[in-house]
Length: 153
Length: 164
Image (cartoon, rainbow over all chains, first blue to last red; front, side):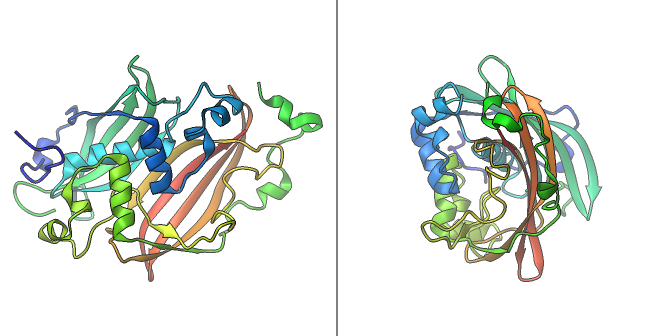
């Protein structure tokens, strides 16, 4: 069995990435501790992410997950899919709904288009995060470059 | 629920002439340092387990001279306590709107960012819009930051910040 985070034992190739292909899902469940770790790692110390009183006085139900952390989760989803030989070209998302600690956030992606650009085999994906009720809180898009079985980027 | 914070100004547009003049204007560039502990701390906070972000031998074996930055990481400013945040303020552009939520992020990578890099980050506001939503009257701020290593642009970040 593949060890967690061991991305070197397999490679997805451009030829595998047909439109409609769903990439392996990543499930994240944030704790307040992780939000504090993210505050320190990213430099975003806005109190609504670790001080429940501040969150409530800002009109929120309680602590909320940083938008940028959800963006980074989508970065992880894509990195784990394209590594070791591919690269992320762009990845972006909108924060349509709030997510809270203690819930499973499903990070998912589907291939929409494959094309060649700048000498690379590129794949455009729809990516998103959905909450346990199936609500897409964080819709986004991404472009990655994958190696080809025939060789070359 | 939050329109009250605008008080007597409730009718006047949020995107004032003064604010509109900020669009397209570059804020002073900021130096960002990309270091190994910062890379590892970011990867740990996200929960990325790939050894490439922790172990230089693994990074070298996969074609990187030094630890690569995880997706979206661009390093740290040399800020001292009390220094203003670099770039346009995240909240408070309009004095009545002191709170903010993040609206969206898009990161474009041109060239890998590596430990030891010093990046020059330049941010500008590319658009300002007023909208009415569940948070009341909102100022939608679209920002763009360009990251350069020497003369080479290595990445661009586009962000939407909602002030309310």
